[in-house]
Amino acid sequence: MDRPHNFSAGPCILPLEVFEKASQSVIDFDGSGLSILEISHRSPAFVEVIEKARALALEQLNLNNKGYKALFMQGGASMQFLMTAYNLLERKAGYLDTGTWSANAIKEASNFGEIEVIASSKDSNYNYIPKNYAIPEGLDYLHCTSNNTIFGTQMKSFPELGETPLVCDMSSDIFSKNIDYSQFDLIYAGAQKNMGPAGATLIVVKEDILGKVSRNIPSMMNYELFIKKESMFNTPPVFSVYVSMLTLEWLARKGGVSVIEKKNQAKADLIYSEIDRNSLFEGFTAKEDRSMMNATFTLKDGSLAPRFDKLWKSANINGLNGHRSVGGYRASMYNALSLESVQVLVDAMKHFEKTI
Ligand SMILES: *Cc1c(COP(=O)(O)O)cnc(C)c1O
Image (cartoon, rainbow, N blue to C red; front, side):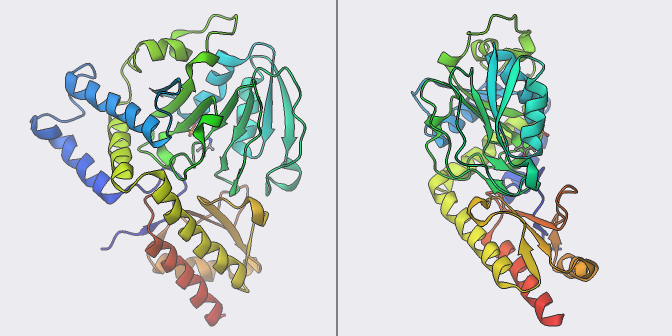
């Protein structure tokens, strides 16, 4: 059977050649006769893997030699909701509330100090990105979520803060486009949206923002310690780091973030123009805030859903159901998804319109 067109939101599609290489390495890692899963994380072979993964991450973000360190940690992006605050929050931080993940970050950070919600789009079920808000002086940092995976909105620009560090949850759009990543002081991303299997979390942090809070930080929460230990304070999630390295190598071979951005833009243009053209569907979000990664849309007449669901499933499409807090449909179009897969979905939508 042909592989389904996989629009899953996360865990999600990765390049087929990455799956192939990863599955070989589970049996025989680079001709060693041993599985990648059975060698020491301190062996030279694995140390090379994690070093390469960290170097490739910085390279793809164009953050080499700019004072940043890349780290792999565990606990997912959700652990970063508290770890960022643990390491950076002394008195008061600002948060942009643009979706469920932002709200979770706010909740966790509140355990460590005062949180001021600078702007929120909760009043309309997070279907837009707030704009024109004032940012108060004296924040320890400002936290934002670049892409709201559940609602399908994406920040197209970021506040300019001067001295105040900018922290960004980039779980679902990291490595998807060429932006100035040096405007951020700390970026984090769970691996499972655009980089690798669940289990690892990438943190890219500017070293000079660390070491400024007065609390004691437990070892497993401590960015400075993980930097010192080269992400090997304890056993890292070896398979997730390895497959992340393979995906980053794949991305580099493809020409990197500026080449993949053009592909991602073409996919997004294709689906959004069909959502706007097709009389049966409507987009969920404000047009100017539409995400290039996750397109959310609904049927104007919800009673047609069983028929449309049957149709897309028969077109070998997987993972199109919207998140329960939005309903409808969500087409997640991460780096590894082909334009052809989006065309199959668009054709199904066109076909559905004709048969109604
Ligand atoms: C998926 C997601 C999360 C949660 O990630 P976990 O690794 O499951 O904790 C957080 N933020 C964003 C933007 C996400 O897309």
